[in-house]
Length: 166
Image (cartoon, rainbow, N blue to C red; front, side, top):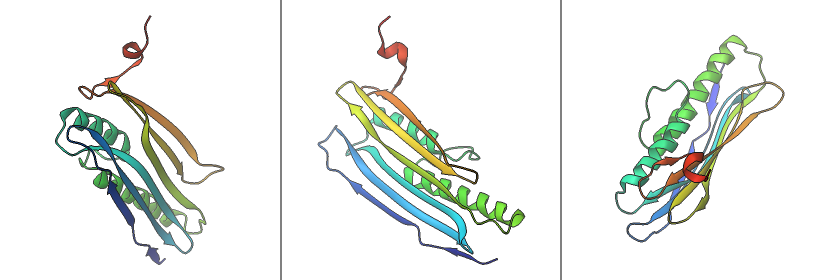
């Protein structure tokens, strides 16, 4: 069994922001690891919240979002978005190659896709969506969307009780 791994293509572009303001950085990464036509592909496209200066509230928001991106088997966050995405990619490839050893005739291409970005924001709140799509065989991929609401003042994750009046 011979493996051909295409180069991992990643790009990051930061949007300029005034001091003290949150901005967005575009993170786009794609990769594939093919074995005789079957394999694993990843596509990550995130508009990541960032700031020109250290901001404790933003750090809390980033850590909460990173926690949702960590691969299932990982015990802790590598701490940076690029490292978390690399861990996701590596985990998918390891799982596929392990599967391929048991089922060498498989013709499937597994994939892991994540999209993320702000849905709504104002001076008080920041709403972010992570959309996941994954396929590891079967009739169709699995997808989900997770929404997070954060207080901009302190980065605290807000729940229904914080947002809705009784």
